[in-house]
Length: 350
Image 1 (cartoon, rainbow, N blue to C red):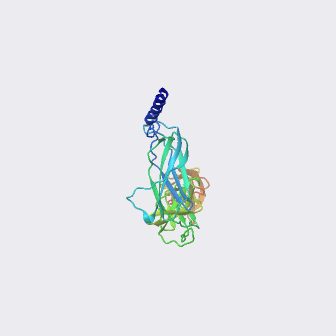
Image 2 (cartoon, rainbow, N blue to C red):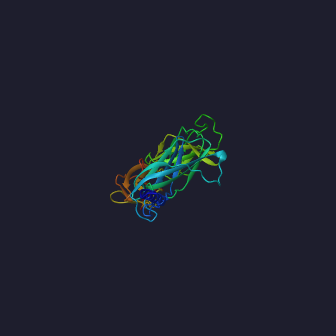
Image 3 (spheres, rainbow, N blue to C red):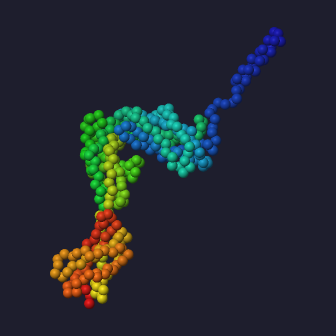
């Protein structure tokens, strides 16, 4: 054997040893805790006849509590199980994730991420969870899991009417009887009310109702509210959101007048007749109106009004040869104002 042959064999052996030893890398690198985001905890969904919309809040901290400035992307996981095969104790068969673009983090934690999909099959149960990433190798733990059953949804309610009341809005609509494909509804059907103050961001209020009337009492007089109504069918105790109605609006108004003033007193003076009364304790009183009735008349006539800061009125145009009786009302700040009943009449005190 020649020297050249020994050298070649040594080179081959050392190369094989180098390849066998490698760099020691056998698993994925473990990212430091300082860049791994906290898990998302507020994944939620909204189902309509168009599909499902998932929303969640951008994480703002790492698992160590450090501030985050950017999320590279989100991984959205989905699992689909036919209802006939559903097993509540079986593992959820999540598939490969769909990448959702990230972005700059809002330091106050208010930025929302959204994912929509219309690829849903009737009679199937869907599961979703999401992870956030700061790089291809630094992903958060799983978010909370949301799930729902998809079925051919019911049509949207029509004929919506909104009637404003005092501290309330009453909504009425026609009953929904058919699904989107024209079939009659053969599942329990309910209606979910949605409300908005700007006619843009609608949110559900209260529980879904089975009647086609709803009275919203969680309102403030003088503010405008916008409403939509979504049909919901219950499939094996799972709510399936259906069509969403057109929006209607209403402004509840204060229709309650103040209480009648008390302590009305009438005194004759050299200048005429002065009428006094007690100040109303109600905050929305805008003023008072004074009425006068002659002894031989059946109806009192309005003779003047004063602002709420005053509780006195002087009647200078009074015939000396007739007897008169005076009453006072309070009115509020509404337009037109709500006026109280007249107070008890008072005559001249001598």
